[in-house]
Length: 100
Image 1 (cartoon, rainbow, N blue to C red):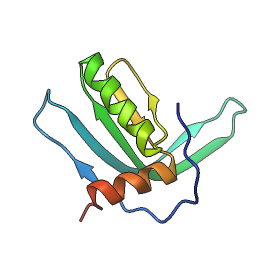
Image 2 (image 1 turned 90 degrees about the horizontal axis):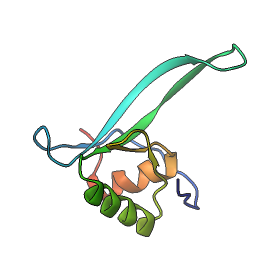
Image 3 (image 1 turned 120 degrees about the vertical axis):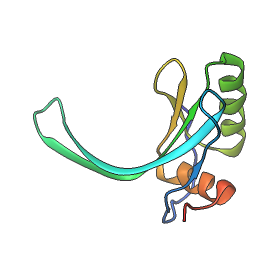
Image 4 (image 1 turned 45 degrees about the horizontal axis):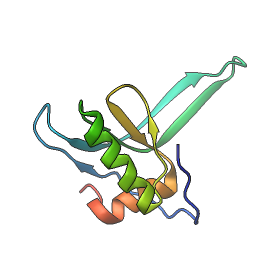
């Protein structure tokens, strides 16, 4: 995980996608509830980006460029990179453009 400094700005959902099995980055704007270890129910609602690729080399290149741009990312499983930090999604919204 990498962190970026700066203040967040309001974000609109964005998406860029290609055919199945190809490189893709997409945003998921949604809300969901989850039960925390303390037993408390937590509600989340924010924009998230996912980059999916089976190639470790392509994921590494993507992550290296996220680092260069100051984008905070995590690897959510063996083929997905998640970007959900508000400041980081704002950077991607500027690059990709907000979803209309």
